[in-house]
Length: 299
Image (cartoon, rainbow, N blue to C red):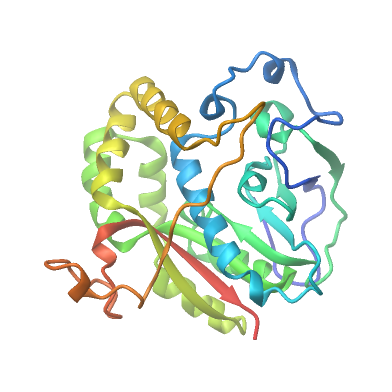
């Protein structure tokens, strides 16, 4: 995705608006044959296990930040940059989700049901949305691209920007996982340089935003799954499907999903976890978690 700072977003970018409802709700015009034939398994229809972990944790941060979104009590408007689906809506009932992507393909995800595709305007006004979110994006762009992206997020948001990235502990383990799995996406991320929460925080401060950091997903559980998925993608998908089915709420169609707990940096103390290594300099047991989320707030 190519985003630029300034008065508008790039022309030709496609957008969609989706109601904050389960993925199985009725669609207007994007249901495809692939969707109609999809398995009834929630995991197979919508999310990989990694996406579930990252989306659900981000939803927790948004729900925690809801009091700071002062929009008169109306449904918060959320712009999600990146993948062209509305899966985040499954965790945020009552929120209005918009998705902006440079490659919107209705066949790419069955979670696009209930959505309307439309061509994005050449420009989006400043502070167009209450919240702007970029998940799983930062490790795919270089440092210059991250700076441009964060400026755009800050420009478009009225109250809050949310981004996520691998934690420092996961970055430290990255070369070993890459050596074991030879994963192409991991190789690309390492070659362009993985994001660092300190530098991301600095960029948000330059944009005039304050920020909080949150950690989620235990590293000791994530690393074996990541290694298995890299070595045997089929086995990884099967295990991910099983794990996803365990967290889906029962019900007809595509069930809603619960947000996962997150841990605010500074709220966890090393004394609460004997033997843990403090990597953050802020008395946080960062070594225990695989992913970090930064929520940047407009004063």
